[in-house]
Image 1 (cartoon, rainbow, N blue to C red):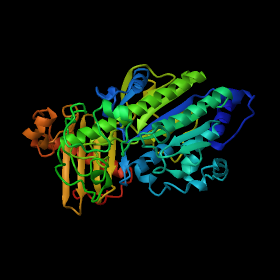
Image 2: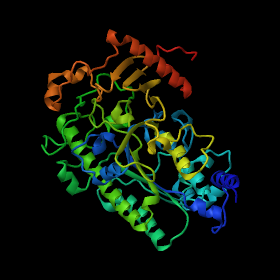
Image 3: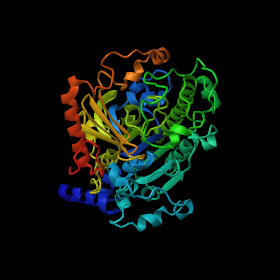
Image 4: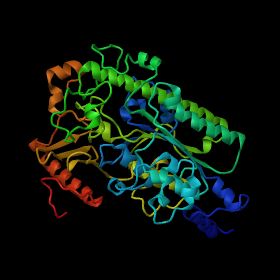
Length: 511
């Protein structure tokens, strides 16, 4: 078969669902495609990993993944139109669509409607169905086995139901049968089956953990290690708990704009408290849950090595978004500070230089186009994201110059941000105009987005961090008026580019 025809057949196999005899030359070429193991945590702030500066939370397996692969220092989830930030985030992963184009895609159906009928749903797909261009559909048509275990709900169910094997359950217990081990066990069973029944098909494994999202029921021995009690809050500070983050505040300087927001008022063991003992205890619980995830990742990677397929596998680790847990006086992820908007992103696999780092400037919606690129599948016409394969291979440091973020799950228009280089703008327009704020940060000089309130002597006494004069919101500083205007224009351009349906009080309505 000549080169042109081979490329044509491979493209058709990836796009149109063409299946080839296993012994044909093209089939063998298809079968040399890399495996993909995609691991996603729920509500994990990047700063909890050593690769992003943490020195307290023990994550040796994820640290090793970073050392053996690449760490992205600027990966983000784009944002949300819902208080359940994970829903658009996970839908962006499944479809490659931007945040606004995920609205309206179904999040869940009843378990008995599909859990045991993936073949039926796949057979009934048409090109008019958005799920036709989703992760499991694209890779299955390209000859991949598709496997999924994750939390229940809050994603694009049209895609989730298409995985050939699916084990979804929300597991946030300290007990193994209802905790992170449950998810890992199913992956290990799948890999063991491949050992016992070797075949030619590559695999896509989607491994989603339900932690460290609250309720953070850590294993007793790990809670003890981090000085935490479950559920809390404690009456006094345990010195073994993690210290307060440097950008902790007892309350946010202005209302977050989302009345009755669950994450800010009803987190078990916290509720509305933001005092030192409560926040440090919750950080201890968070770290206990993250270390358990790391243990389970280690078990999965050990089994993967036993299969003999490790060297031909791309491994990705990320989270659906970050989380505050006391930073800026907030507890949830419904904000656009870096701790909540940024996600950790590690990758290892063929062609990736060990111990490398790159800015990346990726969104989670770029995951699907990248998987397609690595697997030799044409990027679906419905995807807005870009392949970051050039970054993985060290050919580029980033795939875009500007990043846009949105939170629109509370009062409208909500929050927007834009980041270019070291500069970041956040705008707030909420509560029918009662909250209108603008923040401008130089992230190189003020990476923790410290505010005037962080200079309060009582705050400094608890965090042990004394901000310098430049570590503040610069929006009202006349010296930065030109930069502010530039970033405002940039934000409007990005909002227009993604068809953001809202405009802020000081933005023109006709753009």
